[in-house]
Image 1: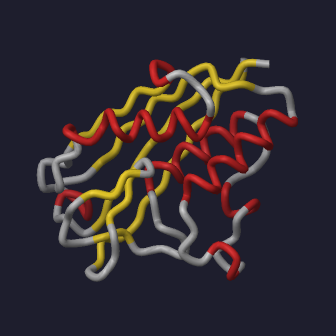
Image 2: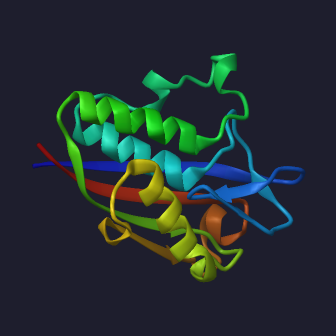
Image 3: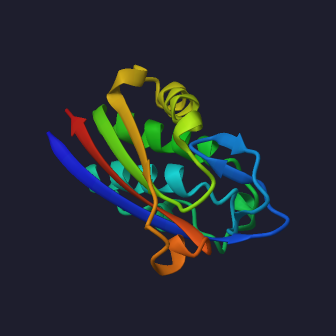
Length: 156
């Protein structure tokens, strides 16, 4: 068994879609980034890559590469899945905490779990998503950005 941790953060800005866990949310702001800036999926990818000893998403999908400009992070997660399979790893489970003052994420968590599970080719019960606020403290509490922590277990 191998354990990995991932963390990501992106600033909220106007004129961008808000995509979390591969699900587009109806919100007035979106996350700034080179790709679709899906902070949740990025944290999951970093946890998976870290557990496998394969570095991080910056090593595999650098933001300096125009090929990844605006890319759907689920496509990147599918590539991570292939890297894991090539090393003989399978996902045991993934546990994620999204930190956002707004919008309310609870109504969307099941759809996000389903999307991530489908991309990874695993049962939805192997993914657990939670959302919390920062009680209006810090940059996330002021609604300036969204951050995410992910932990995973890989099995050989």
